[in-house]
Image (cartoon, rainbow, N blue to C red):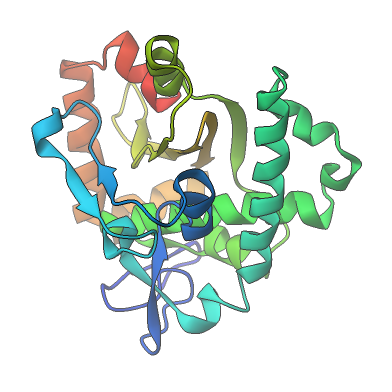
Length: 260
């Protein structure tokens, strides 16, 4: 283990590295899926850009189809992060209410409860730090120690940037269909340096209904150095993906859909 990165091995917790009592973690919270879709209907899942004949189905919000491949240990997924999960539920309800009133969902941060640096404010960002740890583990990235520690509440320095808006994809469809039930996640996007091709940040998004959360975390200089010399295989994987993106840039619609 280095100063800022630690190996991630499948079959271990992507937050603390434990190998016992592992559980699944939802890409979109089961409680959020229930609040958006209810519990009675079969849920349809489709990747961005796929046609309707590629639909997958899930029987309930607890389906493994909604889980990351990466695992969390029971302690990390319960007592260590349960408070952040519950705070996100409260935060999302407030943001959803604002958007439903035709207001900017970012106004949720005007609530004194979410004053910058307050414990509820940090818990919201810890929730997105946990999601980033799961997304990066799913592609074989090393564990970023300070991001994982922040997610677990053992570090106080916020390392996640967050914006909130109305989901672009939802807005396009709703303009033709009217309001409908919807949830999505943006997978993992690697930011790369235009000159060197080296990874410098990880980005994702989460949408529940019309409300979208776009979040990312930048690698500091020491993380970038450790990634290059300590994890050459993943370092080269990032460079290859950055090069491919330069050769075939995303369309404007794809960028808007990903919150870029």
